[in-house]
Image (cartoon, rainbow, N blue to C red; front, side, top):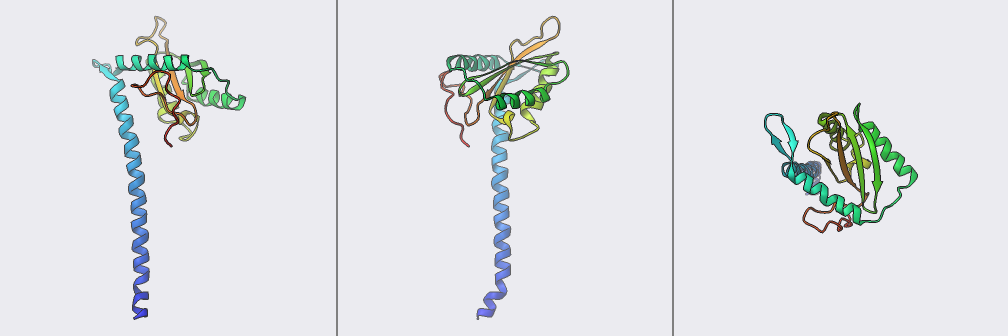
Length: 190
């Protein structure tokens, strides 16, 4: 009888391993789907399409930008460690397209404010894609919770567009849109 049990042991072990791999794959896919769904919801909430131009415009985006600016202003300024600041500046510089410049980088205890200038909306959109939607290092500095919006919907007469990006400090989330503007100090759920 013991020999008969041993003959099925490789089959049982193999089936267990296959089920374990399938469960792991299903769980990883479920997490990815949740992140993608959240990002799609955020994009849908913050942007609308204006006419045939396909240019994102939004009143909700400017309200969210203003809410984050109030939260940033209420918190105490923090000096980034020299190495951290240099790493962030390098990552931002690498993502800036030709004609775009980093104007300012300031941080508080839970939030960094990045101000950039771009040669039009297309330059701004390229920057956002390169820096935050497809960062070179998916788990690097620029992969933290982020919100970005132009300071004005239209470029200036010379074609430049100034934008502000709020980037959560490591271990923190952006303040929720429904929370008090100064309440962004809650640690991110990791």
